[in-house]
Length: 237
Image 1 (cartoon, rainbow, N blue to C red):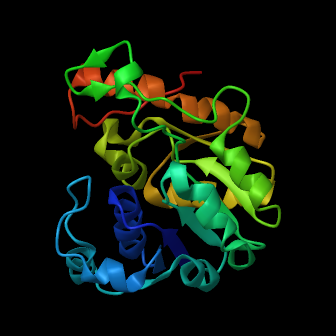
Image 2 (tube, rainbow, N blue to C red; image 1 turned 45 degrees about the vertical axis):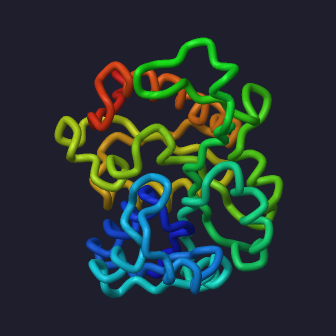
């Protein structure tokens, strides 16, 4: 399939590399192709400049956000950060019309460290906006009424989403939520390709609220285990 990945950060790179490995044609979207290709320094998360990643992954086509979305057969992976996702996706609404958008963004609020009551040796717990009565997934769906939004991938680090076998032989749980049953099935099929055996449908997109707020527990577990320790969660029936 022709699949689009919007974003060039670490999570988007994990999906891009895995999709290539699985034999898909991958179109990566970025805000400014020339600026992305001109970078010579690591990004804010320490990832190598994107040209180095492209050199190691021949076959990737780098386009604008809209160009990548338009090139996809159906499936588009949203790797745009939560703070900018609604605006960036709204700007390419026509290119996303009729397609399945799998969203793993979390609506993190940045710069709240001074107000946080519980700093840890590794940082502070996250803060979200929206929270409780809305979710980023729902905001994206309202902004893109012609697009089938599926919330998924969000309860794991993206390297683990793309390669679930790295944790407990793949025996842990991934979730999907959204209004369109066919779109959720397409995302589930991709998860099966990745290696997930336990995919739990949480129903309508309102369930994105719980998935996004799970980042609190995910952060707490990550702090307890130590930075960089891969882990998963399992729903035991």
